[in-house]
Image 1 (cartoon, rainbow, N blue to C red):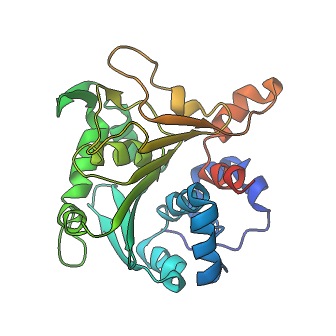
Image 2: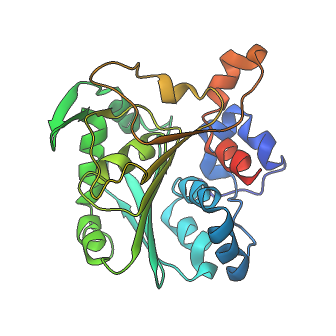
Length: 262
């Protein structure tokens, strides 16, 4: 995996490029250079923005994930199933945040997960087969000493959060079907299935952000077996003249970070 670079473009311009869309690991997180106190204030005031940054950081390799969060008081464990499914669990004194990496256009295994659209029954719902297999594989992946599933089940005294972008967003929702999270906040999430019920779901625990006309959020058409889950929050709307290219670039996690900062 490539090293995170100092970007010569400002963050908004990074998000409006195909390189920013397809290679988010190349660009620094907006959390860089925040003090611990500033991070804690951001968590109170702009929680969705912080979680969007965690979804961006999920694209980094393990060393850079650790480096990005080392000053904020988190104990971080990274998970990689060896088949392209990756995420990390960041735990501090009172909360734990699971961030799951989204689709990488250079990884054929991610593309295969995305394309396996035939729905399968799972916990009384119909869900995307590729997303389900990816989520279950990641949950069984061992971190430093134990699987992600075991680690999550041990954190019953922490407020649990899950987040992800694109494929990672879909996987976060499926993980939430078997693990109770206080909040699931996703970005650029495709339709995952139908009849989905999250553990401890009160109807408000899943917020799904959609930037502009993000093409991925609509790439699986709405039908009885595929519907969006959660409470939708719309972000920036671009001009209609930008629609074709704009709907693609709207999917960049860097764009989500920038819009939520505003």
